[in-house]
Length: 200
Image (tube, rainbow, N blue to C red; front, side):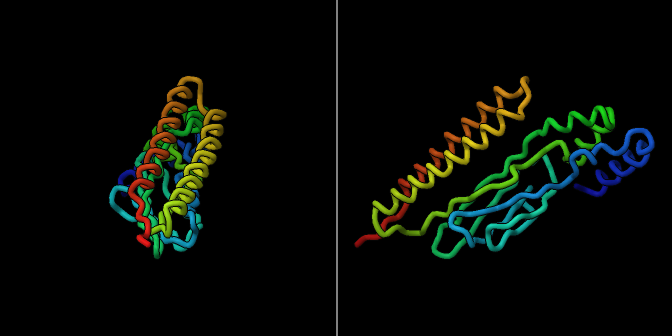
């Protein structure tokens, strides 16, 4: 958040403090995100808009990041493994609508300016792919396990989403979650096809 955004938010909060309080108190401007890898012990760099905002070394580790509408790119490195990337997508958090009761229209404006109406997933696990597999069987077992692990994690996340999404947006959010799940599985299968197997 730039200087002028912070200044405007501070001024709004100060001027309305005696009336309704500052709405960002409901959610806050930052959140903790846990970065893990499979296998663990990697170094992961988190970037947003081309700027590094956090580093986890080694994984797993938890960092505090500012909420924002923009996605966060993650790149993880570990010796003997290919560099792996992932994305932390920012999602609208319906809890912020409660700020209408706390701070009225000003509350919504403050949350919009501060990024507090958005959330990132609280945890993400990045799969690291070995530079080379000893056999085709070892490769297939690795990717079979990776697909199964991701599907289990994804189903748990989708179930959680179904319990907190609003009626107006739930159908679309569930559809997007399913599409993301299918795309991730397709990406893993593409990487399986490209994975290098040692020539014995």
